[in-house]
Length: 113
Image (cartoon, rainbow, N blue to C red; front, top):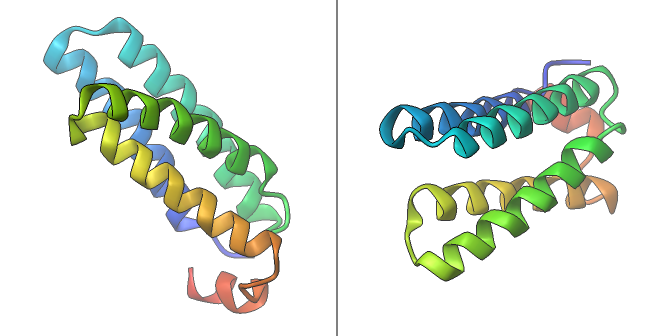
């Protein structure tokens, strides 16, 4: 049982994005959403670190965040920040989908991460 470093990095990126949105634009909704989603993702990363098969929370949160930010990216056409967060979220969904369908050997994946 090693640390799920990719999931922790993703959670930290989402939380830092919310903080950056507040600092640069004074956006309280960005701060709240970034910290809320970052915290939930951080807890999900903790769960997957304890048990690699316990990825439902981070999987669902990544899917929701990917959908929301993908919609914002589609409407605005601006890559930063919506496109980046959507791309990272989709990558995490693909990662955990591969786990779900057994395309990734969990023992080997936990040794590499």
